[in-house]
Image (cartoon, rainbow, N blue to C red; front, side, top):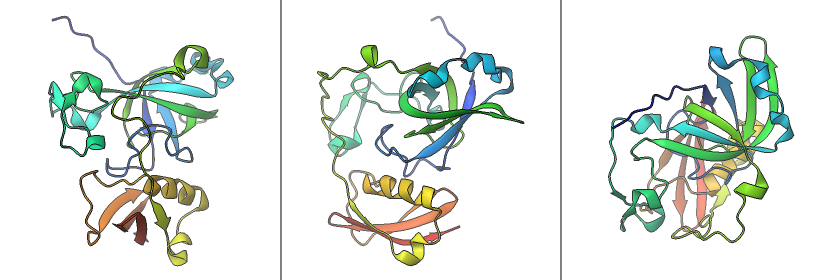
Length: 226
């Protein structure tokens, strides 16, 4: 079988040092900020000429945490409670033959950093900190947007939770991080099959360890510590 070598052109810098809590799809938490830092050989500003004329970009990236896990022809999508199998090519499972992901994010700005060269600031990404990025392409609505598309077993974004964060905890978290954290928690970061109101979950986000519990449709933050 013919093989192709793909090398990362950049790395994602995000508020998620681990997989737990990352939004299940790009764009569902629009206030989530992150940035793309390029490898030295791709830090030529000419390579980005015209990119600011686009509001959104596609990021092609690698599921770097799953490279040793292999793949299976069928998977159990969390959306279906982990109880029903679907073909891997009918899902967005990370356990794929080539472990590549595709995300559409909003491009906020392009900056030229003195040390890092061109840096892309984006919103709505669903990538862990350090994720290898293998390519970037502009999003073009006339070709990429299909208003009549069918969504299979995932017709909508799913239910959201009411989020309660005590004021004393809110005061610890910077305002720009707080709004993003609320969005992440509202989309229920727990595995779909877990629904124990007594269980306390811990999630790392933006330099904090956030602990929370969920009862009925309300998520309560218990603590947030550096």
